[in-house]
Length: 136
Image 1: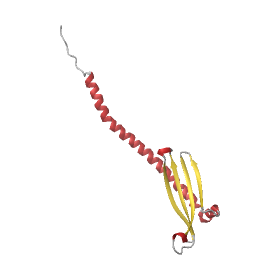
Image 2: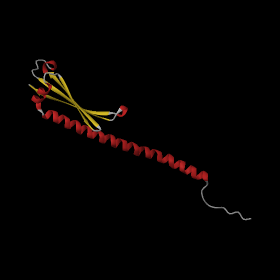
Image 3: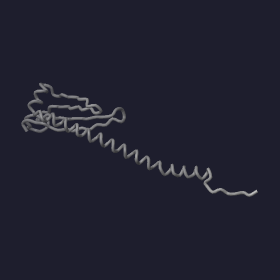
Image 4: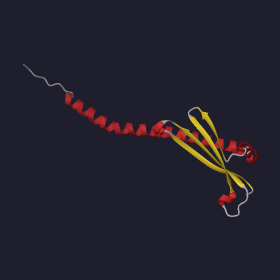
């Protein structure tokens, strides 16, 4: 009886090769997943900053007189908007310049616009603060 030897890989060699390939590809996959997460996170942050700037310009565009009239005797006021995935909140506070600087006359309105997104531990937010004044 003649025994012939067939060429090929044994099962053990195939398992070892698949294991080595998996160990090489796992870090590569993790890198791509991390890059995708960073790109998505950056996109959300860019949209949030744009929405915050838009909200700030809308409020400041009303002018000091109209904002003061809107606040009508209140020291603080806020506006909230639901923009789908994002939420925008604008908080306004009146500060007397005499409280801030010696001999200051007049007042300023501190405007803070915050845009938030996500829920739970994954929630994030971006805030912009500006001032609108009279008597400066």
